[in-house]
Image 1 (tube, rainbow over the protein chains, first blue to last red):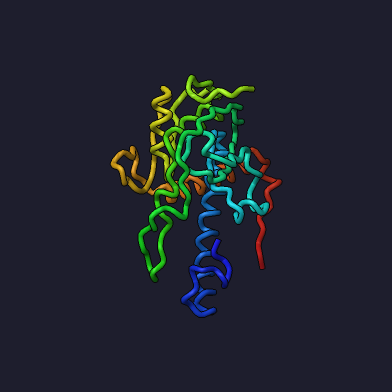
Image 2 (cartoon, helix red, strand yellow):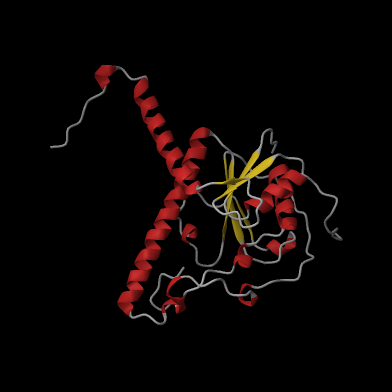
Length: 162
Length: 80
């Protein structure tokens, strides 16, 4: 989360400069966190059904009891539903409940975050994350919708022996 | 769950989900501040919309709270 002096991104800075960077990062995090709370608040009040996702990596701000509730679903391996990454992802459902389904589609060659081309440089020589890292395969999107939103069984998918 | 109306997809990857909803026969639109692939239905500043809608919802909630209460139960508070 780049909130520590020892993080690699800050290696060329002195400690005070690192503190300044971390302060900016903390303000950004607070801003986006409040936007998320507001969006959820509006949906709760208006009784709109809302589903949103966020990566569920080891270090995670929303993991430390900092959010309204725990995620409804955590998909620990997106490759099993047709994505290119393992990338554990959490999903929150408000004003609705997920359906139960599992369309197994384990047919992609695994991509790892470290093997992707670097993102574009922004300020101070730092880089954005590669856009490819955020991509979701259309197969995964379809399987997620069928498994957890529509409860729709699909013709595709691998059969298992048991 | 049954979806009767339209699905609205926001932010990054909204186009991917929008397209899959449509292929499954469910009307969908996407909203994002960027239009990198030229397929975004609504290129809007979602952050501003969220802020505006939240403020409006909060004000409506305040009005509703006081609306049905008898006048003599409302005490103005002055901070000195």
